[in-house]
Image (tube, rainbow, N blue to C red; front, side, top):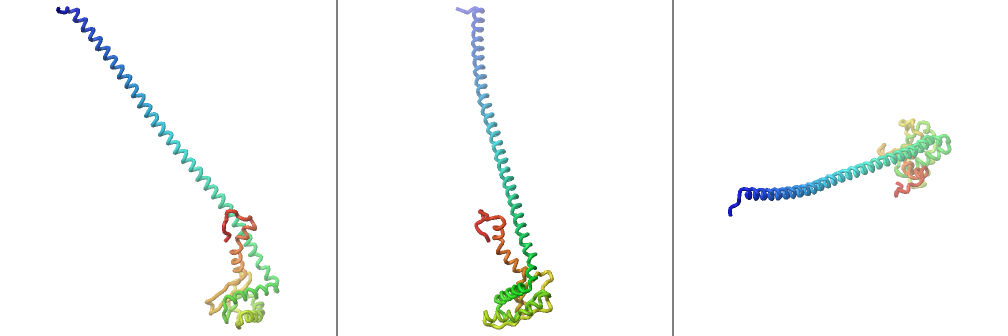
Amino acid sequence: MALSDADVQKQIKHMMAFIEQEANEKAEEIDAKAEEEFNIEKGRLVQQQRLKIMEYYEKKEKQVELQKKIQSSNMLNQARLKVLKVREDHVRNVLDEAHKRLGEVTHNSSRYTEVLTTLILQALYQLFETNVVLRVRSQDQGIVEALIPNVASKYKEAVGKDIHLKVDTENYLSSDTTGGVELLAQQGKIKINNTLEARLELISAQLVPQIRTALFGRNVNRKFTD
């Protein structure tokens, strides 16, 4: 039986409504899926950026902490260097004061004669030469010439060997020299400096650790004292 135009139109409308409903449901499904994927991707990107920001600031914090440690270390080193400089200056002041007092021994003629005798004999034992020239301050020439016989006698008694000593009357020690003597042998090729300044420098080098300990106490961090 053939359908009337009204029935055909009705079926067409029914089919169109069905198709539209299907399309709407499909569109809603696509929208829901797109929204879900968008939220997932957004969450991933936000988390990714969040991790990057956290990593950036962690790196910055480490850099700041490292910079603080470097600054603290530099300040500590500077403080230590200042302390060491003050201590070394103090030690040098002590040695300078000792140098200033060197001349006091020359004011006592008998004591200074003993010192000169000891200084000459010490150098002679090192030289172990037969002919030795003594170089002294011009004001000490008379004292040294007077003690030469005694020195020669003591030297022969100690080593069993004669020695000829002569004061250099053409070349004297510098006027800045506090006292003491220089000994020359082998036509000046061998020289021993036994002036008071030279002896002080030698003793100072040996006694600086003891001077530091006396002034500042023992350094618990120092394993060796030389």
